[in-house]
Image (cartoon, rainbow, N blue to C red; front, side, top):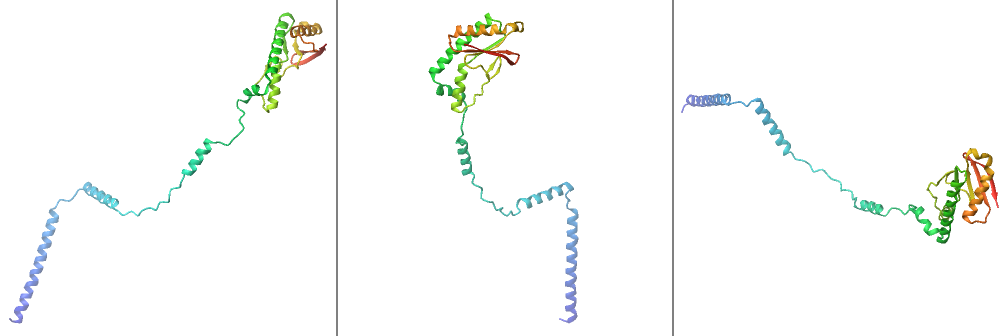
Length: 224
């Protein structure tokens, strides 16, 4: 074959390849142009699905976890401490119980009998003598105070009397207030109260009468 023929055949082959390439490109452009394009909303949904897939299947490195603190022992200790609080001196109710433990029952019975006699005198004095206020010794209070002092307990009860709170006459002593109209006769009234008290209680001890005017003692006299 001659050289000129070989060159012609090569040129034809190259031209054929070029023609086929241009035909392929034209067919691809036609296919892409005819294919329907997704709407903006469809494209947005597709993009979200892509991102979700990337997020779901993205590799996550394990986070190192510190060992949990053991609170079992501390909780047990707290429960045990709550169940067994520190021992403290509890005086609740001691004011109510100390009488039966510290007061001699014989002395208590004697004190209660003396209190009844004093109250009978007070009632009779209000009925027969000019009297505004009257108060006699309360021997039961005295025994309670004595027992509380021995037990080291402070009595919190408020004892109210006609002459003030938590105060009272001594044994065989009477506190009086009389009407102002009888002020000139106060000495006779004091002596009559002493006689009446002696008759009602049967005591042979000296008797003290203290006359109060308002909130203050005014006159005091002892009767043998």
